[in-house]
Length: 114
Length: 112
Image (cartoon, rainbow over all chains, first blue to last red):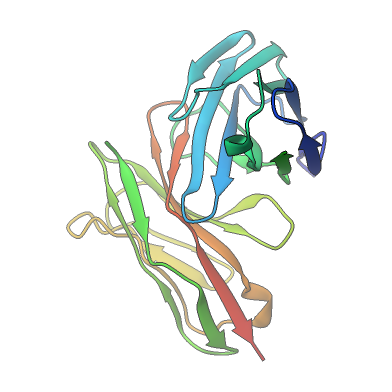
């Protein structure tokens, strides 16, 4: 069974903390993504990576960074957490083949910043 | 820029009722279109997709047809079940890296 695994289901962090969200996929996919899910807004792309050490900004990258040192792992970093980053974060992966391939999602990390 | 608009929910139906969730899109070029579903407590999973005009995607009794002339991709099911209760997202894919643009999501609640 194919899997995208996010390290935490729930996290509570304090304002100003540096936060790491980890994602691992076992499908040997080239593309990996971080989305943020908010009610009424759907999912919005934060960052994506198409290869090891390669990354590109999505639609809402401000306040976030990413790291991809190994093909299977993609980390989202909140440099200094703020309350407006309280949200559900979803990681996804897909093969390189192009725009009509299926994306596989993790179960999500619900982050609360207090 | 590219965008997806889908009907607001929640949609509440009785079991065996007919379902339609409207989705329209704005995009340059010819995007691929998707419906993803999110069951309670889970991540998203692909329900169906269509890659060109007039294609019909189908899965688990759900169907959607890619209508270029109306820029729409409405989701339909003839007879819903309680197990279909979930949040449904319409999405389009832009570019070669399968970056997805999502609609806001529509919550469906089906009652016995």
